[in-house]
Length: 614
Image 1 (cartoon, rainbow, N blue to C red):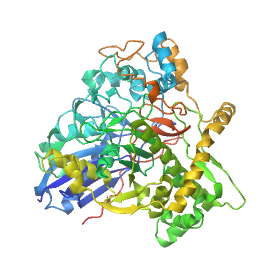
Image 2: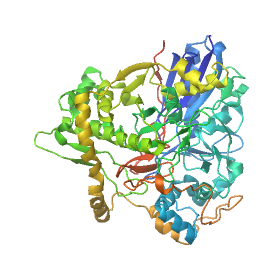
Image 3: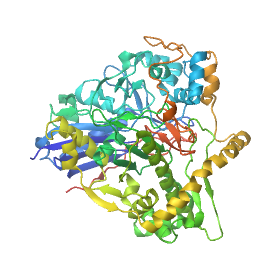
Image 4: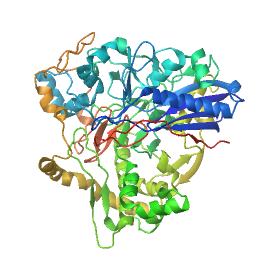
């Protein structure tokens, strides 16, 4: 079987074009890097969509120019991209404005105002703030208010994947699994939300401005002559719908059942499961559509995640940075010595990694507690690693409670998963085996697997997993450290609830984290319509203020966990796990930390890095 599969994987800072064979081996690949965003104003994070498309063009051109014999063997291709980066596209496939990326933090209060009964119901189930803040995060509301002409000219309001599909095939079609974010998506029913659904009210995108949705593995179309000329791939090549980068990453790690969870050790760290039953990780936090038809990915996110390694490197890693420059090694590899020089458990020094405010807990901060005179910067580094592992354990245990399943092992992917010490530490804290797959390009592999099923190379997703995913390394929890971490996990869970009131006092005194006017959801939802800034066009069916909507499926009393609070909702939504706001239901893609200052980051294409081939 010599058919080959092309996967395009567009992240926040780079785009990869990867070719896999039917057994899941990497045949060849290219990566094109670019600056993650431009920030013309504080908190804004925008990107010219042509940068993404140029990344695809350049990566494909280099890939096939360097491997000219591969094009004749291509059987199909699929696209996977970052989540919740939205593009206003006209009928010619051109972007009407820069894409607003998932890192953007601008707010708009939106227009939906529930009636008295609706407010009462939302407050009863603890989601009134969640709904208001989720609406404020919806960039469609900002565009409609501040750029009404752009919205009026928008033909399709689409994810990056939909933009690519149109450029490749001429069809405005996207996967249900790719549509994650502040959009009117009915995740449970795997379709666009109808007019009365609350998500259509919170994120008012007219039906005609939405791409047609298909399931993963269904055809999007075939590559046009123009796209073939630009990318150097065969015209007529079938393009199949895949899923978002996180969904494809889970599939590429072989996570298809309740006994296994997926850990993404990226800038934003996530833990997710793949289930046949739709289960929200918490109230109003959707389970996203998996890259397998009929399956869902309930997910918890730790927003800053392994970004904290970069923070440590920049703030406390001067010695490693200088040594790395002298020796030509990576500073992150040198940090292993810091872990080796500190004992497991860190003599009680603990870090809670909530270094970004959340949806329902906008006052949340991180903290490091338990200092003694024996602790040094090596102990701080271990506290970061152990704190992230504790947070992932909280998320995993919450998913187990919500789904009713038990996870026997976890699959680790993402940049930090390349480090054996971090994987071993995580296994000790989780108390479960952690495995790594043969390729770190898990999201690209997942997209290739969907294409293989769509093209009939494999007769189903179970076969694709069996044939294309191979375990490369496995880390068993060490009994002596597992017991220690089990005992330390309980005091770790107490940190946030004990400090929450203190964080609120700090916010009132210092004004940090800043709470924008639009992020005062409870007040906004109870207020009358805000004054118009600009006359924005109204949706085809203007959202009504109805008390209860058919998409708000409030959890039954038995499903609620009174010991837990919720934190960030919708997509861009952090949540509380245990009694602390560990994670969020995530829609984010790969890449950089969010903009925080007024300095503008200019976008430019940089030289490519070749992906290892075999």
